[in-house]
Amino acid sequence: MTFVRRSVLTICFTILLACVAPRIGPGPRVAPRIVIAQTSSPAPARANQQNAYSLSPDKLAKAIAISRIRNIMDIVGGLWGLAVLWLLLASRAAARLEAWAQSITARRWIQGMIFFAAFILITAVASLPLDWFSQHVERSYDISVQGWGSWLGDQGKSLGLSLLIGAPVLLLFNWIVRRWPRRYWFGIWMATLPLLVLSIFAQPLLEPIFNKFEPLSKNHAGLVTELEKVVARTGTNIPPDRMFLMMASVKTNGLNAYVSGLGATKRIVVWDTTAGRVPDDEVLFIFGHESGHYVLHHIPKLIAGMAFALFFIYWACAGFAAWLARRFGSRWQLGGSENATPLASRAGFVVLLFAISGAGFVLEPINNTFSRHFEHQADVYGQEAIHGLVPDPQKTAVSAFNHLGEAWLEDPNPSPFIEFWEFNHPSVQTRAIFAQNYDPWANGGHGEFFDK
Ligand SMILES: [Zn+2]
Figure 1 (cartoon, rainbow, N blue to C red):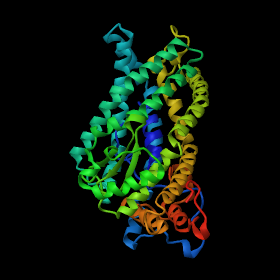
Figure 2: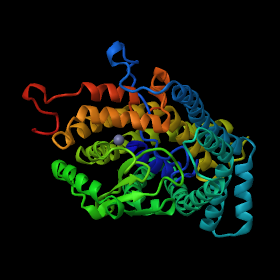
Figure 3: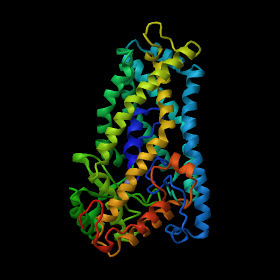
Figure 4: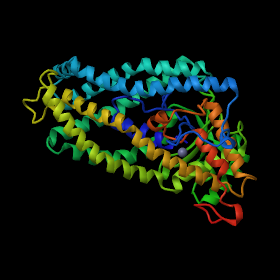
């Protein structure tokens, strides 16, 4: 269900900022935490609604404690990423790295590959302690069950992918700055658009690097039969051979199911921690929610929205980066006498990355606000999708949210500020309360997305 984070943040920002915090693969923190957030609306006021999502006292204590750590780590992680870039510039390490790459070869593109590969490596190593700590916390709360060897292996794979994909992308962007020093932000914007689409298309092709998949029908034939009923009702074109079981249980106790890919790579994935462990009816609901993202064209809408926003973000970042370069360029030894703009040098390009990362950090609440809207729509769709297929859609949805919230230890009453800033889903509580009260079929009515 972490559809938006998966599709847009994980992927697009992985490609764009890549580079800045290299994590293409499902790293521990960006990994699908299905059920996360909450909406900007405050906790429910009416007593009879307050317990749509509740936890036992000991789980509640744990959920509050781990949520606090997660929330702090989210913000610290963002700030730390920015700090690392600033330190690279201010310590002149970026400038020295550029000089070193130039001393190795005269070929400019090889210099660039060396510089950006080293840059990705450095930022990856710098974020390792935070990633390690997050993983340590998830393990101590029994959410992650992944051993450290396997975890390090995933980090290594993620780094390898970042080098393979991120370095050439950064080189391309840097080349665009060199080639069109005045209007480069427009060129980078143009180059970003196909990369966005490609990254969503390619995601299912990269996932098997991190996790094992098998056909869902292999061990869950009954569930597949049920899912096909939802497919028929929703009109999504997902045949059984596009339904997969992901072996998540070797790494986590969390629950999840999601849709990924585009066109020929489109598929539904259910974690093995979910299929068979929560009632099939609830898997149908989660599947219905995921189908909603597709049927309601959330991917094209998000791509269009990102494209629109990035046009202005890149423009503004170009201005900000130019100002930073004027202000600090000589102190940071960005060079630039041969270049029309200091930003065209390798080290200068890091200034631009700093500006874009800063924008990403500051704009995250806006991104999350859109995300929560789409997630809510998908919740409505999911509940309507299972109407007539399960005895009581309201009960099924509420129960699913309770299972999800409990599995991930989601805080039933997070602070409104944290919700607004960090949550890409409405809170479990908000979602459960909505589900409990959503009954458009009462008195012969029908839902928003289905005629009956
Ligand atoms: Zn979702």
